[in-house]
Every structure is written in C-alpha cells, then in structure tokens.
Amino acid sequence: MARYVGPQCRYCRAEKRQLMLKGDRCKSGKCPIAQKKGAPGRGPRDRYKKMTDYGMQLRERQKLKRLYGMLEKQFYRTFMEADRLPGKTGEELIMLLERRLDNVVYRMHFASSRKQARQLIGHGHVQVNGKKVTIPSYILKEGDEITIKAQSQKMVTIKEALKEYSKAGVYPWIQLDPDVMKGTFLAVPRRSEVTELEDINEQLIVELYSR
Image 1 (spheres, rainbow, N blue to C red):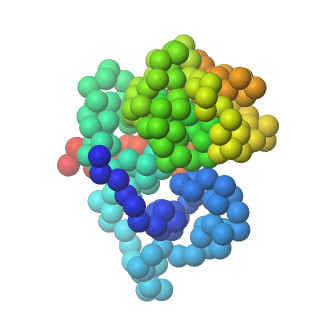
Image 2: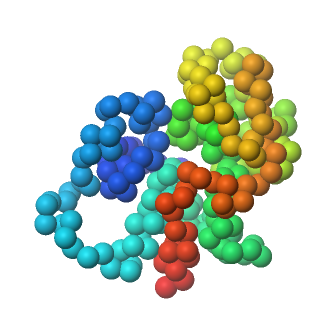
Image 3: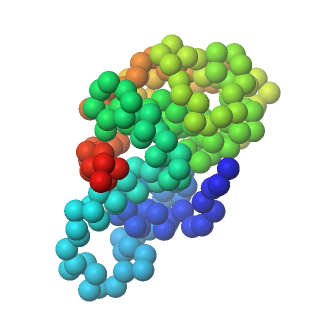
C-alpha cells in the first residue's frame, strides 16, 4: 500500500492548523503552528492572492484527507461509498471516517496519533470483538468492542498515550476502560458532535468531486 513518508509538519503548515500527525510533538513548542510558521513554498506576496473556488474546494479536501492520514485513492473510494448512502454525502463521509478502526483506536487514546494507531493495528496489537483485525480502514459497527491484545498491554507507547485519557476523556459515542485497555464504539456520531472538524466545510469536498 502506498504511503506518504515525507515531513509530516509540512502538512500542518500547508493547512494552517494542527492535524495531530505527530502525537505529543504537536502539543509541544516544536509544533510549526505554535511557532506561527507560514505555509511551505509561499512568499510574502502569496498572502495577498485571492483563492479561487476550486482552490478552496481543493484545500478543504486536502485538509480532511490529511487529518485522517489517507491518500487520494482511498479517500475517493470512501467518498463514493458515502455518496451511495441515503443521507447527505458530506455528513456520511465524516461518519464513515469516524468509524474507521484507526480513528477509533486514536480516539480511545491507545495511540497518540492516527499514524501510530495504524501501526498498532497493522502489527496485530488490536482486537475487535475478541478477534485480531489488521486492517486500519475496517469500518466499525455500533456495539463493537475494541481491545488491546493481552500480550501487548505492557507496551510503553500505549501506556503513554493512555495518559491523555485522564486529561481529555473520550467523545460521548465511545466508552473506555483504561485499566483493562478495552473500549466500546457505542454509536455512529452525528456530524455536529465531531467538534474537531468544526472548521471543515465538507460541502466544498462534495462540490469538488461533483465537477
């Protein structure tokens, strides 16, 4: 499977917001957004250029795609699946992204970033309903239980990531017992509940793919 191996912080600078791609580093003073660094490859004159409608649509797609750590082929496939569902395409897209196993593992604080969550899943440390799942894009259903394999519960990276639970808790559609490293995906969240995406206008993404 293709993957991006370049500098992660470059993405945050391009989108002018934290994408939480590097876990704890994103919360430190080393974050380029905290240092107020500008977008890569742009000079002072570029800030005065007016963005076209296409440019706005493209930036919105890039922002959402990079936030969930996906490349174009996989993201477009998810969009087409959302387009076949009966609800609003943009909202269905967000809900499908939130149901991905790598996203939920990250939301449960088993990993400090979605990239780290994909690594844990790929290495077989995560179980869904008692069975090992190694596919990060696995779509969860209501009531699914996510656990860290017993042999993997001693991992330092997981224990360090779980410290964030005492600070931030979890979203209301997720239940977590950090002591046994077990969580439940209670329900598919509504679009308004995903507060992390308040600055995302998914309708622009729908318009981009409808051109």
